[in-house]
Length: 338
Image (cartoon, rainbow, N blue to C red):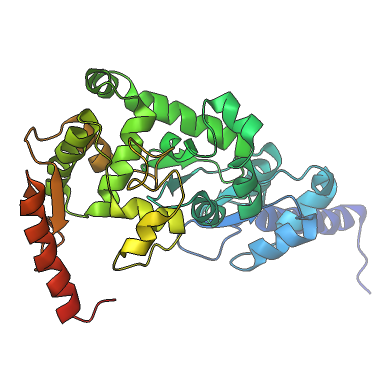
């Protein structure tokens, strides 16, 4: 019978250790992801070690990651965030990102919405903050005061651009970032133009928001801006239909009737002269720039064209305006628009 000497036993033991090490290295350094492109996991405040592993398992291997997590006490040091897992990354690298909070930012676009509740709903779909938290912050007078706004003017702080943000940004940090972006947007030429018009940025945004609701035709916006500025200069009520819709919170209205003009609201520009207390939506950049660079003319009235092109007929006198309004009313009746 063949016997094994000590060298043979050492060889067998050493081979076994090598195999174990190779398997360990394979497990820990083989790419975690099965996918050919970057995958993302979102770790929130409710996540546990097991739930994080479960999220990774949707597209990758978790054996190596699970071993490392157990031996590094990851479960007690979970950090929220949006984490990218590249196709080439092994468990060591993935865990390092998770433990150190090395997350990837994302692009968040501020939409031109009519209400702050709607803004909260949109943002909650892109950020970790829930819609209630955002909405409550946008109604928090003390918080808004620190930013220089109130519940009527806060929409003027938001510039509808796309911003690079971290998914787990806090609501306080988010609002401070938006304030900085607002200040940068107004720095220089825009502020100088507003000063020449005798308007504050909030007032410019308020007028721009009305113009945005009057038309989606960007080319016509400077013309409408000139008309409203003429009215303001002569202390005439703006008589802007979009402000009635905002006051009634009936944004779907196709026609404004005489009884609606009696609505007692500071946003009713038929009853109250000057600008309303704040914007009726987040104003577009094209709308803001239209107010800052208006077309100079003598028009005081406008009415939507009867061809429903989205543009307007302008008039200098009220009698001329009545003719335009009659044509538009007939067109509405002919189409059965109530």
